[in-house]
Image 1 (cartoon, rainbow, N blue to C red):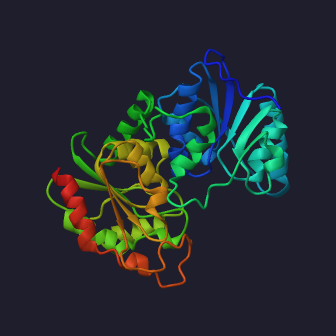
Image 2: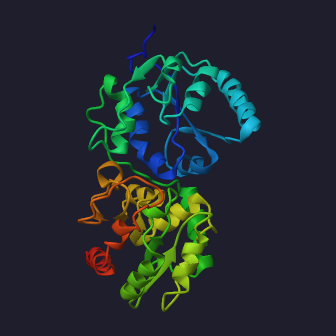
Image 3: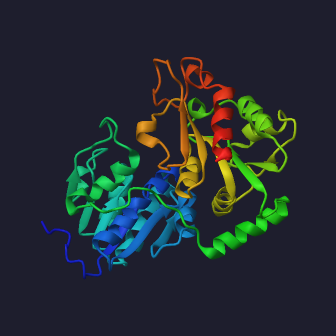
Length: 349
């Protein structure tokens, strides 16, 4: 079996199969940077589903982005076959598989990539040329290190472990135009709030408590913007109808790139454990991150300006469930007062 070239002068053609969720995509950024650290002349392509491709496209980087749609049923199988044949024409030499799925390994195999590196999960080990033992249950392993661990055998010392998201100038310019449309001054103190989380209700703090924190933080010169994607409109509406002065509601109304620009203009970002939480961290925004059913050891924002709040004294947390069988005790234990105090402290800095 051949091995990946260790010659740093080689123009190695690499395809990275990206994670399927925004937060995981953010946490994969150090791996992309590590590829250039290991192979400075690498020709690097990210293959990403449509819902996360925009994140990679918005980032200042030499990475090329190929977008694809997953499809459903028989359509999904046809798209999978077509994608594999499309990639075969690219002549990639190395595939790095970040998703744990069988389908990602099938894509790499159909693409004819000679070196296919990934974790041996979901019965796909026979499709990989370099198989790594599954580490998902490893205690204290952060998701970012799980991804970066794919390159451990090549040596990742000196690689920056912090995801960094610097936006392209053209992306920023389009996003700033949105501020004018929303009536937000370029120098106004903006506080971003994301009340959603794609995984399920067990990650979502209560809209009425978000609303109460907004009311407590509402002082002269502070503006609030609600952010989020399709399907989170009801949460935003509950907050808007509960606060004394409704915040600017952009939930379900922006592209991901526009949301990233809005977050980049915030003096503070308040959210659950979510994809936009990780985006705010990568943008270096002071933030308060609330954790219910999930574990900060695995998915905390990698940001020295972040304050993580997790329920204390709740024996069932973290349970990693999307729906709670225990009446959301972990979220109830997070109080308005402690979230407000953390937010005010960050704003004071």
